[in-house]
Amino acid sequence: MLQALLQLFYPHVCEGCGRELSSTEKILCIRCDLQLPLTGFHKTAENPAERMFWGRVPMQRVSAGYFFYHQGILQKLVHAFKYKKRSDIAIFLGRRLGFQLKESGWAKDVTALAPVPLHAMKQRHRGYNQAALLAEG
Figure 1 (cartoon, rainbow, N blue to C red):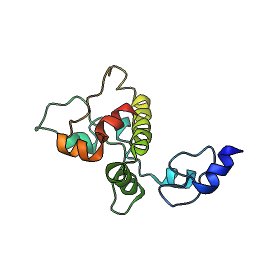
Figure 2: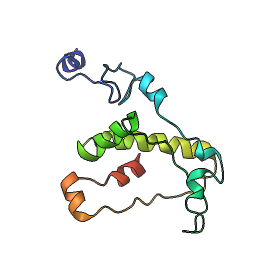
Figure 3: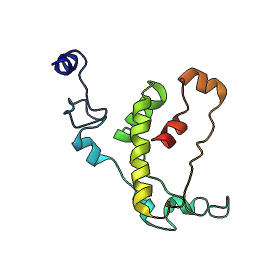
């Protein structure tokens, strides 16, 4: 009963399209979730993300979870967790990326993730390091 009352005054809406979320949906509705532009790079060695680092930095494997498009759903999500203090979205995306790495099999020997440090002034302004929240997820 209390949950229904709270939902009336503070509705949970999809971050992609603004539609009200069902009780089983988190952050995105199913329709928007299926529209996230997955790369599939985690399934392939020598993928385009990996090629970007060839000859620059020694790396064993590189992946990117999503394609980033201007005005796309992913841009809305990233903007929300970077500039609107929606840390829950960073954790949500981090979990999704973690599932992709788990599915790949090549990350099974990974024992830790090291997020890129954020400048202290930006961390004070935002209140958190978004890379750390992605890694936490």
